[in-house]
Length: 467
Image 1 (cartoon, helix red, strand yellow):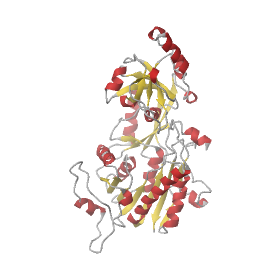
Image 2 (cartoon, one colour):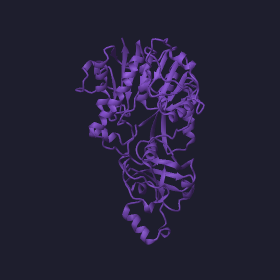
Image 3 (cartoon, helix red, strand yellow):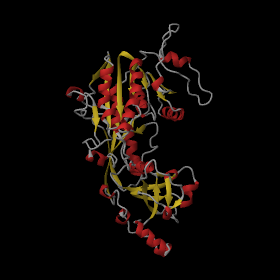
Image 4 (cartoon, one colour):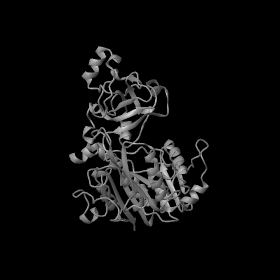
């Protein structure tokens, strides 16, 4: 467990780009990514190649750097001193401030910017820093200056910081992320609402290419285990499919890509705000077969009254009216035996996400609340699935109560559900022993260990058939 928790601090070495087969091809994406990364004039070299087992996946791995910051330096305050010979002129600081700076361990080679934790985790995955992610900064930062970047790692329940603080007034815990070039002067970090504040040039940990927004519509960044889910569900042309918890939409759009838009996909999330964003994403991917709905999937099973006729999902959608407020269709739910395939990736404890700059403790009671909530989705999903239909269940956590024990719950509570193996050609390891599954059943599921050879996020996936 200690080894696994250690790996959660770092991002996976590989950046995974899932190709949108609706509008592009693997060869086209590889060629354009190669040209894009050459134009970046990065300190790092990258290898770009198609995944050996997943045909619509392109994998990028960073190579050598002229002056990279090693993984072992991730949490060292003095890391900037090892990658640059520039110094802040001492006459720029009053003697008292200079002593205070040295005493607190801030670098004397660079001015400093501190970002929030979530921004920091994005930086370790290759992102640049948007101004909204910056919490505080040294005085006097100018456009084009090389600066040191740190992430604040206060607990979620701690009092939040007021944006715009001077570094000398910052109090908290932080970790070193890397070196970047300021894209504007300090005052503009906090006066602007959009735009990039710092362009990262060197990061702690494995090198990750900055690809947010690159080749939009042709590909998307997606973790390898999430791509495995779409392949495991194996959508066929003409299928009626339900994604019960679709936001942010990556897995749903993958299904549309695999079907080449020849089918009917209902994508749900109870948050209207999320679904409006997801709808725009689907449109950008050309996924015209997806119907986005603001619908709580735990309440999506309609009871067929004696005076009513059963209607298919398409008939329900065709008869629905659009909301005048946001244009989303007003649909209350669907009847039993409506879908050929269901993708269930419910909210979870997210203990497998990488990188995690801070791993907050959760009690066993907290973890069991996640599992109980997931069972509400299961109880709605199975009646909605047609006999002979396929369902995948997946989470981005390493918690057995939400993974192997959930598989046991499904098999014991719903005799109509049969666990079927996910293709051995797809990445992933067997489930854990001693948590309710037989050795044969453990071999049918896919568990991804952050410390495993595949070097992925923590994840779990299982596949079922309804008899």
